[in-house]
Amino acid sequence: MPACSFIQNDVNKTLGHNNGNKARQADLAASQVTTIGVNAYLWRAALETLSFAPLAQADANGGVIVTDWYANPSAPSDRVKVTATILDRDLRADALRVAASRQVLQNGQWVEAPVAAATVQRLEEIILTRARDLRRNAIAG
Image (cartoon, rainbow, N blue to C red; front, side, top):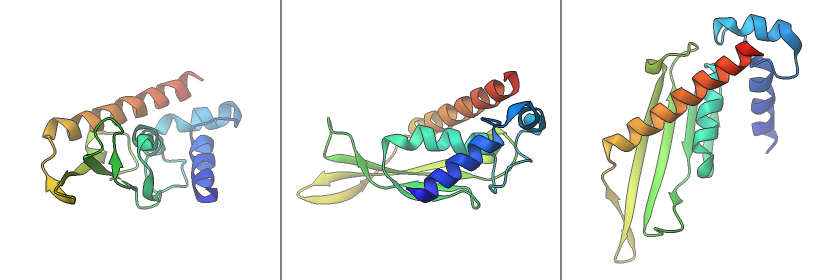
């Protein structure tokens, strides 16, 4: 995936990996040194968190990650699709929005089903925690 490697290299550069201390010191402002359009920590954390499902779309400039349908092998009649939207260049809780769609297989057809609000909130918490960890690690060097 050449496009994904470009994004990964850009995020790594932004986070100060393989760039020495100058990049790490400049990164104290959270994301203003990034060439992607959104907060690099949130972007990387969202990609890592949603890596369980195949990606349908990843737009670093627009801050949108959309997974394809994913069915857990232990529950193949239930599938989920997740969209993570990063709304800002700053690492803040309100800079992330996660939405999910769920379908269940009934009589050979996929039918829309509700997603528990706690599921979406938990995904947001996981992404935010991971983003904060990435930032802390980058600053600590």
